[in-house]
Length: 237
Image (tube, rainbow, N blue to C red):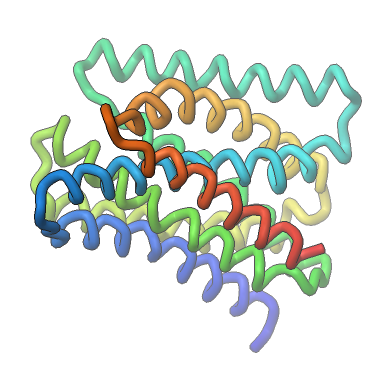
């Protein structure tokens, strides 16, 4: 398989984890109710841990390579501030899509990095694609539940839109494969910008949903999510 076709296939498979997570959230029915609630909070925490691992182990380390200390910090802060403005705008319209936006902020820059990795002949691209897919699954799960609860969209429409969003992966990967691989500093800048936005989303929207009174297992989901990122990071080194 040529590198271009590999980029398209792997980013598409990673993106399809988003609607897969949504379908699991739609069809799951767990009894008793306390176990279902604990599982839901655990999955939310897992997604937050996976996002933190993406920031700490992938996006920031790759992003700072081509920037000075102050430039990197400025891009990181700009990402957080931009996401805060988006969040404020969404709250004013009585719509909450923080987890959906956070998911795309994670998925798109990592797909760009995957396309650039193939263009540069990296042998770690397949493992990176696997890590992206494992992050997208709980993020799609949580984003579906958020939209289903706080919007008027039907489950069918949400899942269809998630399939459409999965195409952002191949589009981003092909873009990076053909053009951005020649300007790696642009990819690094996108990663830093996205990192700030993702970190804002984790503490603004995801972490507060993890707490469940008199239950202590859900926070371990965050530990497991970060551990997943750590395994992927160490395997790619």
